[in-house]
Amino acid sequence: MVAKKHLNSPFLIPVREIAHRSGEMREHDIEVAAPEQWGEGLVSVPQGEPVQIDVRLESVHEGILVTAEVATRMVGVCGRCLTDIAQPVEVEFQELFGYPGGEANDFEVQDDHVDLETPVRDSIVLSLPFQPVCQPDCPGLDPSTGVKLTDSAEPETPIDPRWAALQALTPDHDDTAQRRAADDTEKS
Image (tube, rainbow, N blue to C red; front, side):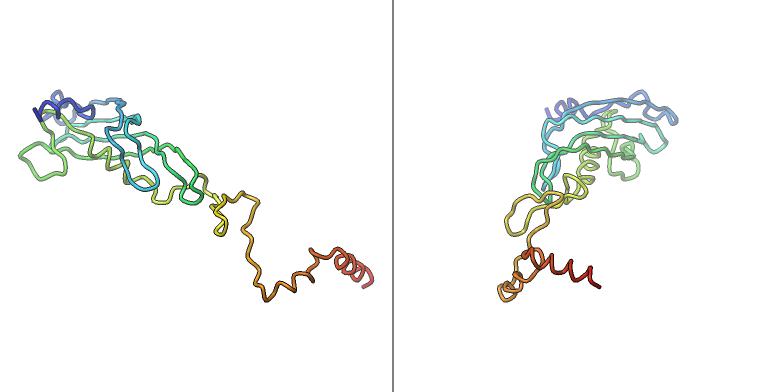
């Protein structure tokens, strides 16, 4: 029963035609749904998200060399302002699927098939950012109010109550002080 489930995986690619025929090559374009959520934290690839795989299989002496380009979409929240984000993820990988009974490899050709689920999942998860941002210059949240900052807004720095009385003497709070300063400048 387990073998049948294994052979029904959408990530399985038959290699019978090229196995043990060094120099043979096949290319495949596959689109499958992510079987489960890939990734933890602020962003991940949700279950059911389409995963596009362009794969080249090359028969070499040691096994099947798999070169793939994978494209999908990650969803989550910005690490600075906590707004929802959805961004494309594109990764490449190359793995050798060794023939059974040969040298120890991370992956093996099994039943004349290569199973791409593990290398695809690993390459996608390893490419997900730890601190994703909605835009490279995202200003984040105001530390005191928790409101999202805009590009022009700067967080207000609280005024020390000991210096609050001096604020009345600043030019931006007293229009007459501005006029006096301008008059003094013209006389000199």
